[in-house]
Length: 179
Image 1 (tube, rainbow, N blue to C red):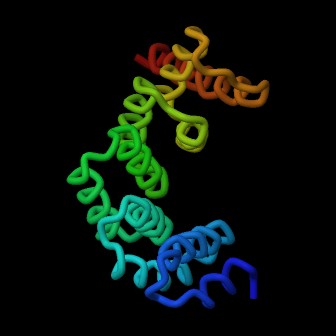
Image 2 (cartoon, one colour):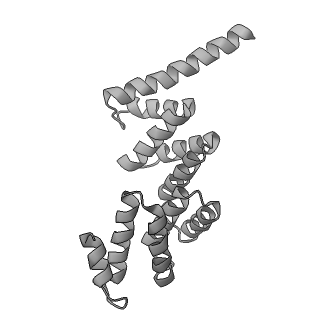
Image 3 (spheres, rainbow, N blue to C red):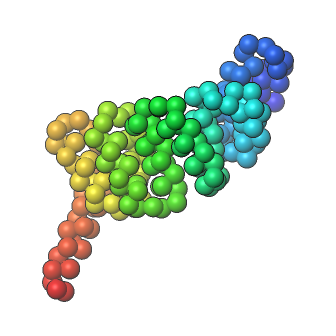
């Protein structure tokens, strides 16, 4: 038994740190890829604190991980109703659309996030969407930010970005040649 699990299990339900330890334990399970087990403990947490912001975040992430469309819709609605930061809402939507390979919505969410203030974790998901879906729209938006010196990529990232842009150029040349 891990220390986090031991602390959680030793804490009585009525204790003021019970929720905090439960959240920590659920996040630990998620980080280890034990999402189904995390969902079980999440149901306990959701019963105790249904509208807490951390609970909504964890629920959204678990729903995305388990491809639970109903859960994703539920937590998206809760995020919108709680007037959460738009970038965070679009970040979760981007993760969902990426998990189901929805190119158009991934591009829309990525461009929106890149037009606002974003953090490194959000940029990592955007880069993943760009490379996995071979998206010219996202690559172009990232290129604009690189020119403005708002985003810095390592050599491998620049190489992969160039590959997406060159593939788009090759496709356009082939379209013009065949037309």
